[in-house]
Length: 426
Image (cartoon, rainbow, N blue to C red; front, side, top):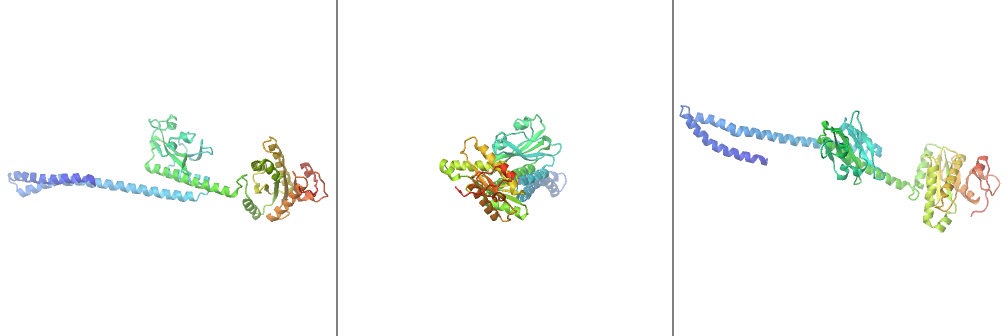
């Protein structure tokens, strides 16, 4: 509005000046025999049209254009908010990172169906970028070749960058290196937990320049995707911390019980191994708790390496561990867990940790359907194994025969040998 006041002031001065000129012109015209007032009216109408009507029309046209501009801004803002709200609702329903990336891929297809759009995120080392999700329509240009977060100008600058043409002087080096002058891009940094760890690339042909609406939408996707992935990562980490033993990384007792309840609800039979490190207190007292912790971690790594992917491995407490093996009976579970003892001997052979052994008891769900009862029975077998000399694994059928002091071997187990309980519980 402020720009129209000089025009109005000029109009007022012009009207006052032209009034006098009209009067003079009317008098001159009246000398030809025409009525003065008729001549004055005619000249006044022409003057008013020139001085007021034309500027007024210009003023109205300008006002209409400004109104149309404000309306376009409001429409754009409304579309932006509506898209942001829909994307937010979709991401809230994504309960995993892969689901969140799928939402982003659908959003890319809606925003720019014919454009190559990808999201690159830093790996665990924060040194390399890895493609997390991509929308690659047929015939679209290839994605960006940037390999590290620091190698991307958008990530370094912390804000979105737009490059109309790869041949421009100020184009991104990764665009100009393509050798394709028809290539342009929009690059938006992706922040997770307040740190720029990735980038969203939209690579397009220079003849298909992105509009402001599309660029804003890409920034919305990058912002909300980074926030959702960060939240899911934090939730996952919190869940892992709640479900695992902090020293060994194995499941804790509560998580073990939850996993076993699932097996029981599904009527899946399983074997249970209760293992205990032999003379662990002596190891701690002799070499210190740090050495004891290293021994626990080594044993946990050995079990994870040897046991099947579907087996449940947990630290039950102190130096006690439990392995639950679905759909396997006690004898086969004993043979499987005996490989842990063999691998443990190999792992200890380098001498970095003082040697130690493990004893275990094995039961299965043919003996009881109660987890507490199974653990109690396995604990009794474990005590028997320790009385028999330690460094051995027993299941129920192996303690029914008369006593012998020889420690059973895997060959004995396969042959049906049954060691005897002795009274030494040291």
